[in-house]
Image 1 (cartoon, rainbow, N blue to C red):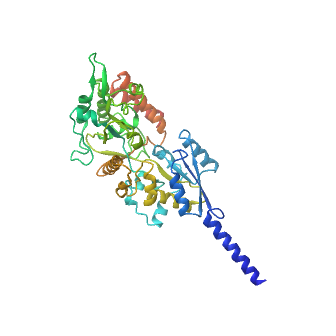
Image 2: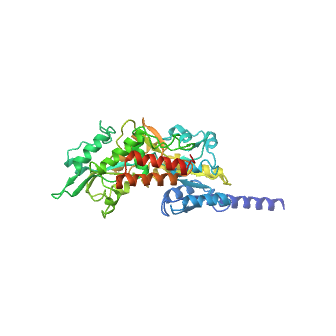
Image 3: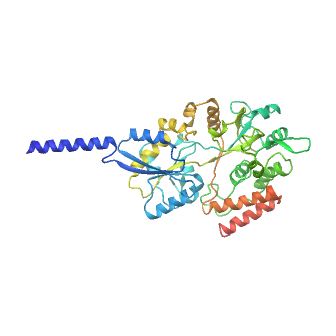
Length: 426
């Protein structure tokens, strides 16, 4: 009987080990949510499963529309996923709510070198002494996608990465280049534009930052109490952009850009197009192209915050969730797989440049790394109270300035007053 019990115990132990190794029996199940589409990151998920057979991933790809609202409903109902991919536009609101697990104690336990991130997590994901996420991607301002055939024809020397002129352009340099590359036909109709549209709150804010302006009285946009749009630095920045359209007539409006079937950049009729760094779209051009940073005026500013991984405070599998989040963001193999989706991870980005699949992608990676050095960092979320409403008010002001010619100082004064009244009760 004793021998039989021993054999049964050994058989049961063997079955449990096989089940654990196969990821079926005894596995921890992690629910992971993101919005990148059903096919996104599949190579990454498959590799993590191979390395961690004791963790079973249930990946939920969701539409961008309604993603945050669904997250909040799940948190309130106790049905939250273990791990969420977040956009930085929600950090200001969500990190204050206590719905995510602080990660600083996990990082300290594992001796994770936080200095290797492009932005300190305590700054990028911090709130009152704790931090709540790890960034997947390096901070990436929009950059100007440049049609080099048009700029070469105009005799313009570009401030490209790898040259002594890199990141030296000021606003006057951009204006001069736009004037040289804007062309009209015999009737005076513009047939080639210097600049694609710059007319949304994010891009206008980046220009304003680089003129020394701020959006709120708190630069972290986490404990702000009022808007500071109506300042000389903001007015000067917005006036420069409005003048590109209404005075100098070198920048098209969004409506004019929408009339181009292929879009402003791919049309081949625009020299400089401000866009996010989507390499797959850049390389669709049938002309010689490059990228340059947004010209600055009084300081260089790079926005931080992007797609980041967080762990639900109510997760029952926090250690396993941390294992996934840490691996996704800091493991060199995970980063190499992530690079295949076009992105450069925030952790030790210098070491990842060689993951680029093509020379121009390598150029982009080098530019992104360089633009995190010796710059001021600012968060591109529009406050912690009601960022959607803040953006809506700023967009209305932009439309009034660019399309209807409302005085810039008046538009920004009215926008500041409305934000302070509606959002902050002042």
